[in-house]
Length: 139
Ligand SMILES: [Zn+2]
Ligand SMILES: [Zn+2]
Image (cartoon, rainbow, N blue to C red):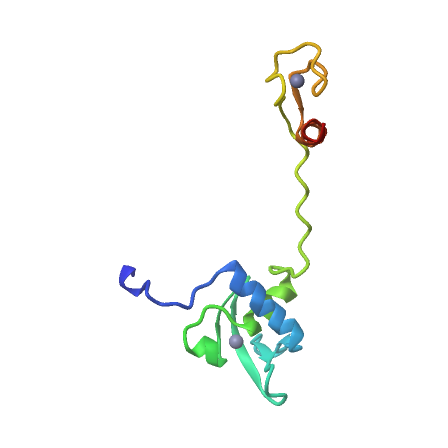
């Protein structure tokens, strides 16, 4: 399969997020037919059309839209399915901000007992050191 890597259409988290955004913006609706179990997604551009979405378990390997027919692994119809089952989430939790990790004191390098920056601890939070450095520069 190495010879097929030139294909530009790839499945990436970024492309799925874009597809999911378009699905929401265009109001794509995803439904499962009660009789056959077939999944269908409404077209974003044609209000009268719907596409068959091929679903196996929690994955959707195929779609009968133009992108799907062109072997694109990503399309907004399948993204709508992933949104429905919660596999895609457009409002992810914000990244927790990294705690201010103490670093070795810039002034005493961890050696001076009476150091005003780290109070003799040898380490101080980077924000505290930056504040001390600003004061030292201004003086
Ligand atoms: Zn599609
Ligand atoms: Zn110090």
